[in-house]
Amino acid sequence: MMTVPSIITMLLRIPGLLFAISVHESAHGFVAYLQGDDLPKRQGRITLNPLPHIDLFGAIALILFGFGWAKPVVTDPTKYKNPKTGMGLTALAGPVANILSAILFAVALKYANKYNIITNKYLLIMVQQAYLINVYLAIFNLLPIPPLDGSKILFIFAPNKYIEFYYRYEVVGQMILIACILFAPYLLSYVLQPIAHVIFTFIEFILSLFP
Image 1 (cartoon, rainbow, N blue to C red):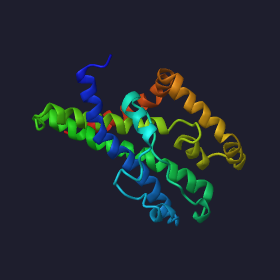
Image 2: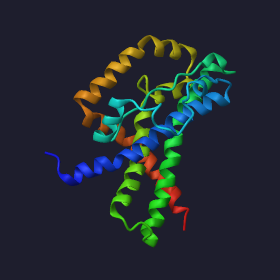
Image 3: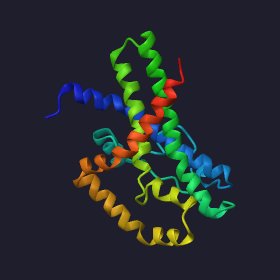
Image 4: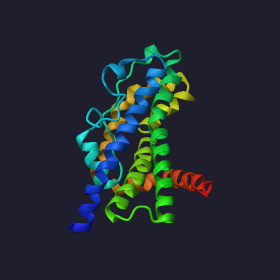
């Protein structure tokens, strides 16, 4: 049975969730646009307005389990000079944007704690949750399982045969991912831990550079 504090914490995750998915999907669209693909811009996906980006079930999963997804940005890789590399860079942009956002929240938390800037405990929890959601949205999307970003980031380094394999078995990857989310969310969390350790260690290093 959920307690009142846990319900409050889940509600305080919502602003961070809306920000995280907006930054993530806007980054995909923006990098695609920089490579000559204006489709995301025409579809209104290069925006921090969360409404065009929200996937209901992905948002609920992110609030409840700490990992989830947003509505994918549709791109046209034929507009890229190098479609294979371009798709990989576009995919990479989302997790990178979330990690950069997490660093900003982590720096804010460091100085808020150091100088007691945030006195409202709910506002402090909200910033903490925004930090964690950005980290875990990046981590989840770095998994090399279609259709997550991690599977497309491999396009940068993989041979053309990988791309053929990807599109042939993309549906299988989606089924595996849905099965894990529905039936084994804690197993998925266990798989995410090594990636989480690397990212949290990197963020701690960045924080150590600030006085």
